[in-house]
Structure formats: C-alpha cells, structure tokens
Length: 555
Image (cartoon, helix red, strand yellow):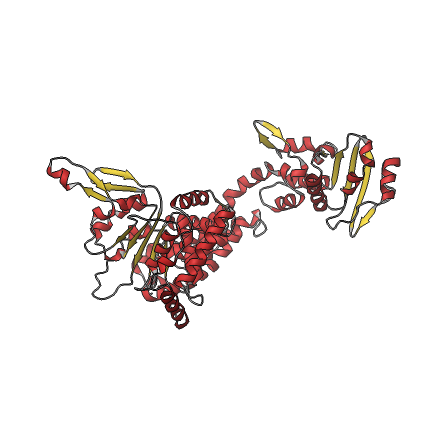
C-alpha cells in the first residue's frame, strides 16, 4: 500500500506540474486530475471534453509515459476512421485466396487506450465501440474476441461550425463512466503553462518520468478493485440517480404536455432537481461507485463512503443528463453547481433511510404520505430494512464493545426485551475478570505495572495491592480522576470493577496488547449466567455451525 501511495503521489505531482490546471475554476484543477487518475486505476471509460489546446490528450500521454506504456495504444479519430482501426477487420490478402480471416486491431490489446477526437468519427464506425465498452468484446462480423477491462479515454471538442463534429450516440455516452470538462485557463495559468512548455522545449511528455511499468499498473488496478463499498455509499448513489427520475408532482405521465404541467411548480426554473432533466440510467450510480473506489484508494482508505461518491458524481452524471436551455459551453460550471442542489434535495431522504433516530417505527405510516417522493422512497427502504436490522444486530452483539452496544440499542428493529438485555450486557462489561492461575502473580512487579491509566498513572497504590494480597480486596475505592475502580481477588480470579463500561473496554484492549498471556474471562458468562439469556434471545454468532462467544478483549 505504501508503494502504491508513493507511485500515485508522484503521478499527481508530475501531472499538476506539467499541465497547470487552475484551482479557482469550476471544476477545480485538482478535481480534474484526481478524477482522471481515479478513472485510470479503476479501468473506467472517460470522456475528456474541452476546446483544442487545453491538454486533454496531453494528460493521457503523460499517464501512459508514467507507466511506461508504448505501442498501438492511441487512435486519432477522423472522418476516415474505420471499424478496422478500432477493433479489426477481414484480412484482404487471405480473402483474395478464398479464406475468411479476421485481423484484430492491436489497439484492443494495449493496457490502456486513447481515442482522440472521437467526435470526428462517423456514426457507423462509432458503433464498433459499443460492444467494446459495454461487454468488453471486439466484434468483427461473426468473430468475437474478449478484451480485458482497461482504462479507455476519448477526447472531444465542443461543437463548432465547419468542424464536422458528430454527436456521440446516447448508448455510447451511457457506456462512458465519466465526462471531465477541462476548466478555462486564466492569465496566470497561461504564464505558468508557457513557462512549463518552454522550459521543456515543447516536449512535456519527454519531461514526464517513467514511474512504473504496465504490469505495475495492472497490479494496482487489481488492488483497487478489491476496495469495499459501504452500504451507505450505495444508498447515497441510488438516491442521487433516483432524484433525476422522479417528478415532485408525480406528473411524469404528463410530460408530453410540457411545459404546461410545470406551470405552477416551484421547480419550473430548473434551479432544483426536477423531471425536466433527462433521467440518468442505473449505470450512473455504478460508474460513480467504481470511480469512488479509486478516490478512496488514493486517500489511503479501504472502503468507499458517501463523501467519495460526492467527489466523482458530477463527472458520472455530466454526459448522461441534459438541461432545458442550458448551453454546452456553460454546462461545465452548471453541472457542478447543479450537483450541490441535488445533494440538498436527497439529504433528507438519506437521513431517514440511515439514521435510526430520524424517524420512529410508529411514524412510518404518516411519512408515507409525504409530498417528497424521495422521502417516500426512503420510508419504503426503512420499512423493508427494519424487518432485517434487528436480526443483523443480534447476530453481532456478542462481539461488540460497550460503545457499539449503545449504538445498537438506538437502532430500530429491536424489541424492548432486546434493549433490556443490551443494558445488562453494558453493565456486565463494566467488570473485567482475569484468571491469574496463581496468587504469586499478584506479587510480581511487572504484573502490577500493567495497571495504569492511559496517562501512565497507577490505578492502585502499593497499599491497595497489599490489601488485595492479604485480604482479597482493596480497603477502599481507588480514585483516578472521575473514574472509580474497585479490585477483588477470589478463587485465583482478579476482578476489576469500573464505573464506566467504555473505560473498562479501553483497559481490556490495553491489557491484551501489553499482556496477551492473561486469560480474560467472558463478562457475560461471569454476570450471573447472562450468557444463557443471550443464547435464548438469539444474541449469538455462529461459526462453523457452533455457537461462538467473542473474547471480550477483542471487542
């Protein structure tokens, strides 16, 4: 992981130094760079959109140089680009001999691919890209070759007169994971760019160091693919996609009479999410979650959270949506600002779906009648989830710390009896039972030294220890700040009684780290037979078909 982090940091640093994208624009230069790198390491398909000379192709060339990728990894799109340039075609020499043989293009074999100026390619040739991007297959007639998933970039310019620009088919755009609009270059950045270009004698790609090899890129991509995606991130992405498909007035069937059906709606000016947006497909959420894996990995995390989705979602939705009266040249900034409003619209629904305290089970029926269709979706989700959440929590309670038990108690789906048992579990965790095996352990100085606070203060005075050895318990409560700790020794078991279960758990962990040889007895077994009650209530983990009780020190 450290080596991956070092490689990605070097890649980011060199890209920012060589292409100089502005940070005071929308989107910010760092957002553009991070999204492109996330697309590379997640093997995503990326559309790079912007006017000529804004470094669209250059940034991909720099990345290829950084990973030492050479060969036929780039095709320059023109009106004459043919299907055989992209995927392959019939071998004409063999065809004249009466043999039908397909020659697949070397373009499909490269570790990454750049299709420059894709908008110049005619629609017939573009069609060859659909199975390549959707199913990972290069098809020529009846012949088909599987193409390993890889990073695929396409650059395109804004529509311009006499430029022979073709609009990308909707099916092709939907198969791209993200669209990045390059920000306009300001005066200051132009000065920096001129300096960078002239300092490197116009050869920016030559100035890019080779940081790794193609096999390292492949290994990195495989590790990124293993990054987990949290349930909350999936729910957040789902709500964002659904927000583009739902009309607040439930007037989707009336859209054929648009704009009449929007006349009295507060969303009519497109300042908030509404059905005037062309709906995103489910692929938008999949693309965003996949790209978010790359961002999560780049920040050293092992799980995608909603904040990672937020960073990439504007780019995942950009090419999949259109807005009434919104010109292409202003869409770059509009899409970022629109996403901020989209987040505001879905946040209440997300809170209802994920926060147990946001709504009580008895209020679900009332909330079903909410005027907000996203809230109604969240209520439906909560209702279906509440039936399962209790069992899921109960199956994990034995391995929870005191803090986790308190959090579990606040969640929905648990009965009053379940909550009462959790209270008893929290009380039981206030007491630590240590099997010393031999009373002589109490005389050992190193053993006594373990009983200190996180700040290094002794929990018990020497006199307290002597009282335990001679009388079986300390003569009075030993006060450490606000915390009271009692100690009792009986039947070769040393018992520590804390006033706070969280503090007891923290001390359990410290003991486990400092003295793993100490046998810490299960607090639920020691608490007047609490374990059988938990078994009867189903608060049990099953491992290998048998009931398992997690050791308290691991909680």
